[in-house]
Structures are given as structure tokens and as C-alpha cells.
Length: 224
Image (cartoon, rainbow, N blue to C red; front, side):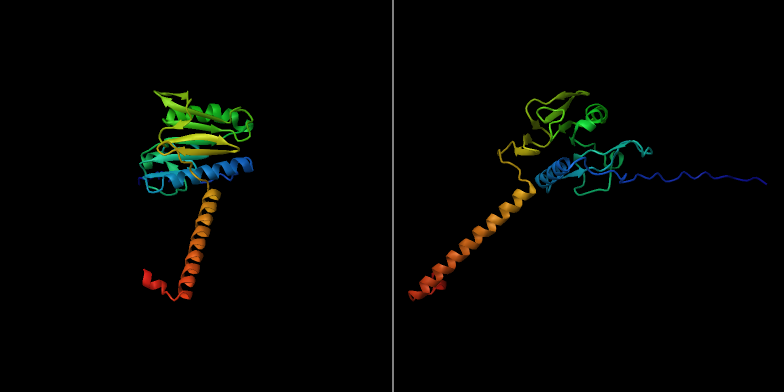
């Protein structure tokens, strides 16, 4: 009697979390969140997605080959979030990556991640040091030219069409076509509140005018 042994190739799992904290400090966390939200709002309606601190898997069948960029922007893919991002499934590598760096992550960010992103063909790699611990100017960008990264001298992220600047402990973004600053969530909330207050003042002014006309014996509705 011949016994046949069937070898079943176990399904490879690609975890979405490793239990590590999202960011080193509150400043780094806030920089990640604001950068994510600003770029996500800017790209709303386009075939693109923006992900933060999620695993980027770059070798099918090898789940340990992964990296978790603080913020990554990918074009020509379905909009919306993912638990993780697998290059071979999506068919696109990220075009822009932002890392919120610190003295503790300097070697990893400046050497390991930089070399990996370069090999993967990620067009731009930006390092933001909100505390200025090892990047004196706080912001340093690299653009892929050929097969190697070169320093970006003009502060422009070409794939996004934005100028990147440091203001305090945050990255701020300005549109190249209009020069307008992209607002962070707190600024958007303030703007909405101001618009509501303006609309309420207009309504009150209209009510006062209507009341005055009625006192003069004029029906406001007859004037419309």
C-alpha cells in the first residue's frame, strides 16, 4: 500500500499591527495626524490614498519584509483606507513618504529606510524633525534621480504639486497653482465656525430689515 503525503502550503499572513506605539512623542504624533489629514483632504476625489503608520509589504510571501512609513501617498489606486498595503496587490509603490524623525530614529530613518525607499523606487522621501534634534532646519527632502536620492533644494514635492514648509512644530503645505495654504483640521473647524457666525449675522440683519419694513407698512415678501 502506497501512502501519499500531501503537503499543504500554509496561507501567509500579513499582520496589520505589531503592538508598537504610533509615535515617539506627542509632537511626532500630532505632526503625523495633521500631515495625514491635510494631504487626504487635498487629494479628495482623486485616484489616490494616504496612509499613516501602516505596514507597507514589499515582497510577496515574506511578511517580515515590511516597513511602516509615518505617512505615505500612493497614486493611481482605489481611494480609502487599508489595514496594510501590499505592493504586489495594488500595483503601485508609494510616490511620497514622510517620516517624523528624532535623534532616536536618526540611523534608521537616514540609512535603513532611506536605502529601502530608494530601492523600492519611492519618488520622494521627506524627513521632518519637529524638535530639531538632528536636522537643524527640521526638514530634509530627497528626490529620486535615476536610481539614487538627491537632496531637494526648492522645498517642492513634485508628485503632490505642493510646497512644503516648517511652521513651528508642524509641516505646512502650499498649493503651487494658487499659493493657498492647506488648512489643518483645527483651522478648518475655525473657518467653518466663522462662516456659520457670518451666516447668522446676515440672517439677523435680514430679520431686522424685514421687521423695519413691516413697521413702515411694507410687506417684505412683496419686494422679492
